[in-house]
Image 1 (cartoon, rainbow, N blue to C red):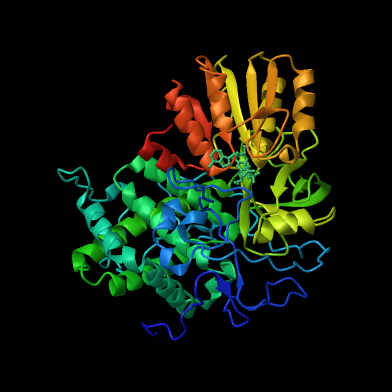
Image 2: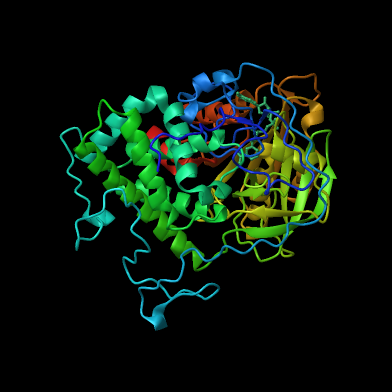
Amino acid sequence: MPDTPAVAPEPSGEVTAGDTGGSRDRPPGWEPVARAVVPETERDPGYGSGLPISAVWQTEPPPPAPSSRWAPLYHSGYGGGVQSAPPEPPEPPDRREPYAPPERRDRYAPPDRTAPPDQQVHPGQQAPPPSRGTRHRRPVETQPPAPGSAAPARDQLPIRPTRSGASPDTLLIRRTLAEIAPVADKTTSYFYALLFIRHPDLRSLFPVAMDVQRDRLFKALLTAAEHADDTATLTEYLSHLGRGHRKYGTLPEHYPAVGECLIAALTRFASDTWSEATEAAWVRVYTTVSQIMIDAAAEDERSSPAWWQAEVVGHELRTRDIAVVTVRPEEPYPFLAGQYTSLETPWWPRIWRNYSFSSAPRSDGLLSFHVKAIPAGWVSNALVHHARPGDVLRLGPPAGSMIVDHTTDNGLLCLGGGTGIAPIKALVEDVAEHGRRRPVEVFYGARHDDDLYDIDTMLGLQRSHPWLSVRPVVSDGPTRRLSGQLTHIVREYGPWPAYDAYLSGPPGMIRSGVDTLVGIGIPSHRIRHDGIEELTTSSTGRG
Ligand SMILES: NC(=O)C1=CN([C@@H]2O[C@H](COP(=O)(O)OP(=O)(O)OC[C@H]3O[C@@H](n4cnc5c(N)ncnc54)[C@H](O)[C@@H]3O)[C@@H](O)[C@H]2O)C=CC1
């Protein structure tokens, strides 16, 4: 097994015909576009820095320049690294046939051959409820425990907080991360090259273009390190991550492979701070991290599929670049108004994008999304310009906590910017269905009059519900409606003492919206929005 990968992976964000991703998963007829740039996901799409926005909906900005790879892990943006105009996304093939029915990967763990036969779980069989503390696999094999000893379980970890509050393991991990920060790009490239050379079977789980993936790994590491001593927060974050990994086909046995290559990459690039103690700390922490993810995925598997197939049944082009796409999931899809899902198209396998549901759950089970095609947005362009009824998409599990609090009679102050109006509409429908009269004030922001693509629907809702008020606000162009920045207008109409706030839209709008609302006295715990993970919310104290 070579220590140094013989083949370095492609530079970030670029795919060439020779990419090791192989062509077997590309849609038929698709010819790789030489050095096509693939958009990022899960990035703060820009408008300056500030809050880390991690869940991104229609936003698929182009990748930052390689030199800015590290800095934007949390706060990336158009201003942070893009140095040239984003290219057009390649044309997706004219694919009309649905996915070949994929083998349903809803068996998270292989049958446990060590269990007595009557307790073994086989593919397709309902797993029995886990006994407390069930462990599927020992995740890290880089430093096998002494014969006869078990791998450290997370509740056995020696967390001994120092006077600074961080445990010794956390301090060692942070030291490593600080050392590799300037060479994070190289470290992740090396890590993935090693992973795919040692475990070529894992390559097919990853997207063809690996740039986003690289950032994700380090973002996860940073987050885990930052919260290593906060068990509750860490467990929540990692459980979400573990459940989310089911749709990629991640299996428990993949974790040791990743751990082994991670340690190898860190050993090489954090040589100044690396020591036996550091390695032991990484093994312990990685073991904990992967075990939490494995357990969460295994538990989730008992009640949910890894993904849902959904057929496009409606496609309405509202403007040149915005479509309302409606799908029918093949199995019931449970979610709450205000949540979002991840979505994969047949044209770009393994590239997932987040989209908010634009309606509350419907009795016919249909789901709708508002999709804006953005420059270099492969998925969004495919959905807006190529998807047609009959196409089959895949949905990940629902996510997000921007849901209506039905335990209070407070009014709802809703700010929806651009396609961010989609989940706001879902929230309004939710309040309507719930039957309790609460004032709902919607401020619907757009840059130009023409961009208010859903204003008729929103005004229709206003006509039906006397408790609802909808105010369109145009920021950049001439208008006979309210004119100015959405947040300024909201402040003018304030001070909103008995309201809970819901914000949805571009990250910059959410940031300035939160600042404005906190500034006029709405406590941060009564301000809800997506895109800032539970973790970062708690670390920034912004609610
Ligand atoms: N759950 C959520 O939070 C959702 C968020 N989105 C996001 O909403 C965005 C929609 O994009 P577009 O329709 O192109 O919106 P846009 O760029 O046209 O802006 C919409 C509104 O937000 C305001 N705005 C934009 N940037 C601002 C800033 N930095 N500070 C203050 N106000 C700002 C604009 O003035 C306008 O009123 C995407 O980034 C998408 O990812 C979309 C759906 C759901």
